[in-house]
Amino acid sequence: MPQSWYPFEGGSTLNQPGSEQGVILRDEEHPLGARITLETSAHTALCAITCGIYGCMMHTRFFSSEAEADREYELMKAALATLLEEAGQSADGGDEVLLDGCARFVERFP
Image 1 (cartoon, rainbow, N blue to C red):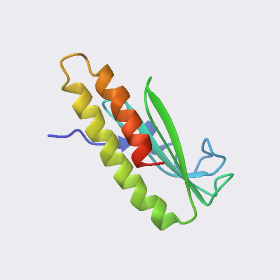
Image 2: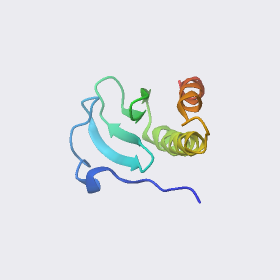
Image 3: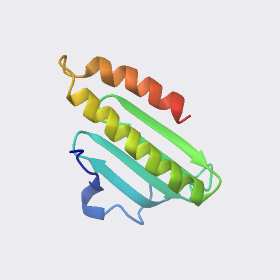
Image 4: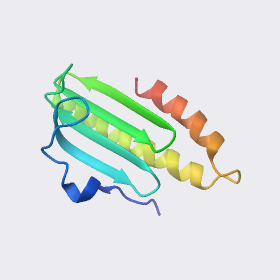
């Protein structure tokens, strides 16, 4: 059974400034080591999604509509969870799976 996302720092970051100088609308962490954040009124666009796998990858995307950002946030969340779960099942500790998977993730979500 897939492990679920939960509010980052218990939800205390919501409505706070984000890394892209916007206001955090959604901020979640995965128990296997990832975080994804959606901001509005970001410095360079209406919305920004910043995500990362701890110790491996950090990636930011920008959007001109909140509806598009919401859709992409959910798709990115699912893809990150799948990647973490696949890496966790790898016999070699998952480093190669993570590296290859991060490259594919950034290609899929430019």
